[in-house]
Length: 161
Image 1: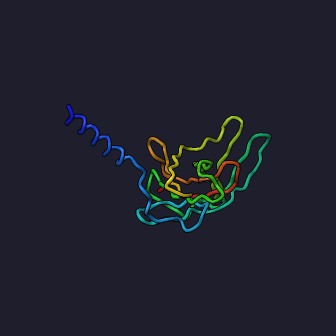
Image 2 (image 1 turned 135 degrees about the vertical axis):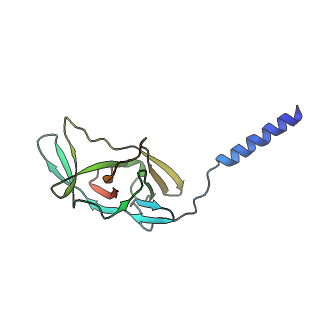
Image 3 (image 1 turned 90 degrees about the vertical axis):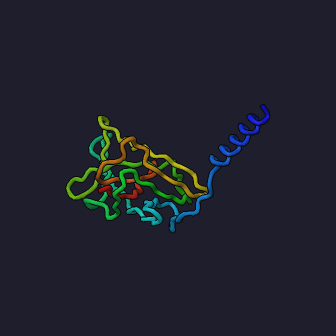
């Protein structure tokens, strides 16, 4: 019986060490408050911009980003971002799929069609560094996307191809 108890205690100890948070030692974003796409050991800065608002009636708003496509591209259907938080909390960031219209990227919301962000998972890596992952069951389709903090028109754009 003592042998079984010792075996169980050592297994529990091994499990506790295996689940302990590892210290992150990979690449770090060179600028705070900008999400960087992770491609192996390389970080790619997302396209930084400001969405312009166009109001079409009482509750209809279109957010417009100039240009038909982002110069920042990834082949990954489940992109991962690193984010060094200084002023922006990573939990406030939403991910939106954009539609291309008249040479611009747009996200529209109205009374009939509410704008809902796609799911993200935020993991602290130590200090002010966070890992932000797309948390959609089937990944993302090819197209134009924007990350944006809640209550702001700041956007960080990228394209999945």
